[in-house]
Length: 259
Image (cartoon, rainbow, N blue to C red):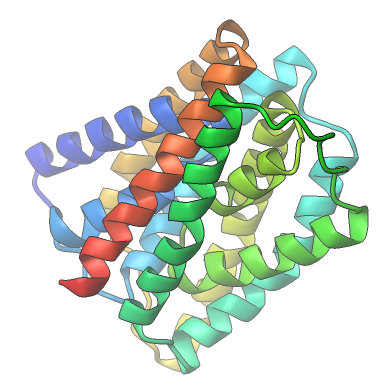
């Protein structure tokens, strides 16, 4: 890696985290195609590289949420309880039985695109019927387990999947965002450790250390600033941003899947 490339990685991590942190998304889901297409990180090294980004970038937003007193509550525990075992399973699947990347991209697009459209439409024109009740603790943990598996396989931040679903079920963005970021950070730490252990089997799953650290440092700064901006943005604007991000990721993965 040359110094200019590392600077580009730092800038990419900063900008992505600044935009995504207010709604509980680490930004790794957007960084994944950047690493593949712009920086040329090969697969499967892109997965642990993305997890490395989350490990380095995560404390920025989490520190800000802790200072505000929003990093706590039952939702954080439920999400972490589900994502931690999921990421270990996902890491093993990534090394020994990798599903086709094209199928994964199209599945993610098929989930996030309509979910984002629905979230934006519901925000702009609230339903007249009573809102649906918030999901039960068991349902939240089950969802977190699935997201943890996906995160372990592809190294993406689980907030990009958890956020739209939980907010769409009526949970406030201010509650979902810190919990989603906390689970993403915990998942990434365990996932990175799992890949380190799996590398002992002879599998070539080492991350691109210099790029991952550079992007992570940018994300550390951007995540702190993004979390600081969150209280200044109304819940309506945050919901629209989350819906737009979900649609953007879905569209991006359609293009990547059909390319």
